[in-house]
Image 1: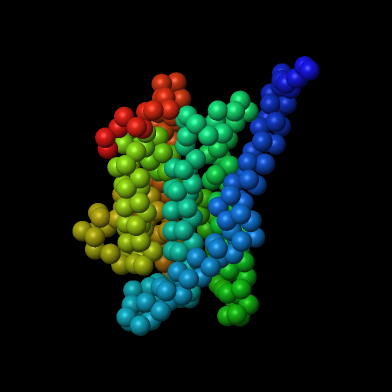
Image 2: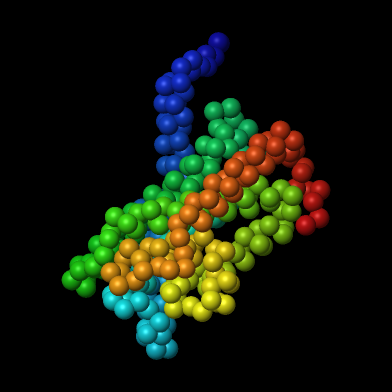
Length: 276
């Protein structure tokens, strides 16, 4: 029996086929982690609410609320927690999606780019939907949430996600060279973000010496800039959005060049030969 394979001869046809594959891959990836998209959404909400409750109690019990920006304390916590979770989730998703050899990439319609986009978009979908529901619940329970410039929060949120993808891609393409060491470094980076992201202390309240330990982190810049849009009386003086943008673009370009080289030269036994 003859098997016919559909070949797209136009750019539009190829784009539609890729979009269709991407949609099904996103749905598959959203269900893969928990077996059910609804359960995955509930887990995202539970993780966010748990962290919100923990930090609310921590700041209250230890008397650290004076370190927060003058205004709505819950908004201060939400701007830090939402961007922190989005960034770390993007790092893990992008790193796990990089697989130059093996898995679904052995099948012709599937590519590394498709795997990466499906993984990060499914994570973004669950994060955005979960955060929207949390904001709705908090708004109803507290009688309202006030953001100085809600539209201005979109770009810092997007860059927290995009910079996480860029860093995750770099970890992913470097993992074949040191399959034991790189995952450990990635885990240390995500744990370090608990402090170096600046979600517990605004940049304007830090000393010049302390800022040098934080400003290498793109998440630190995005969180501080987001709070500049969330509070009418907070003006970020030590952070900017240019650094996360340029860093993300640079890391993505380097990571994709390394990934292209790996697809051409990497074998199934590559990782087994590494001692790191």
